[in-house]
Image 1 (cartoon, rainbow, N blue to C red):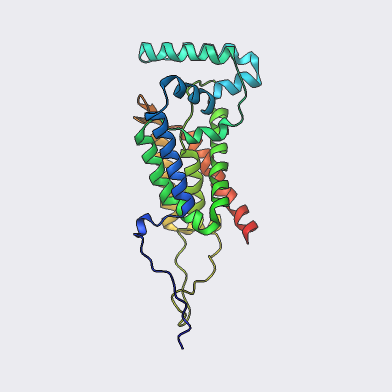
Image 2: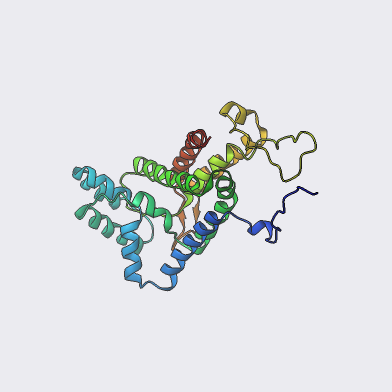
Length: 272
């Protein structure tokens, strides 16, 4: 009698065989941008951007009203297209006149994007690095890592650029957290199967690599080095991710990456 269990047939193409929570995340990001792009009137879209994006200057003035003068002085030094500069200075005056601490913006900014290129760029990396995290830890801990990365990235961005009135948007900080979390285990050599076990019998996931083990893993070191270099370059090179070419918020990426890298061992230990 054959005791091998009947496994469900694998009909889906592997490249689309993402965990459901990752597919839902991508659908949410794409759906929100499509809603803003094709449905919402411009006035509603601007209102959503003001209420949901993370604006460092708003937080700085809300926590210390005396910094309103510094905010306006910083806006006066902006250079570039005269119409854009004038609009940014007018927005800085609005922020200085009506500061408000909006704690939800440390998470909601990650749901908004500046262009379809911006959305596609983030969702591709989300599919690549969110999938292994979701498969190993499930949807709730996957969501926790992404949320912690978005919040940490927003906090670091506010700390390093406190007088900026440029809205911070994009899921890149959360994606960076998932990228860092995946780096703790995806570069580990595949486990060696002992004896003639059936192919469907898989051992428990191996433990995370420690930092010294990562530093001895040439593939992991190359990945981390390339990520740091490209993140630095994106921070100084203008990219067309919004209505106009803009530099990427490298500090938000870095904050998210650090959060994912050091939070995952805590989540892994709790799960075990």
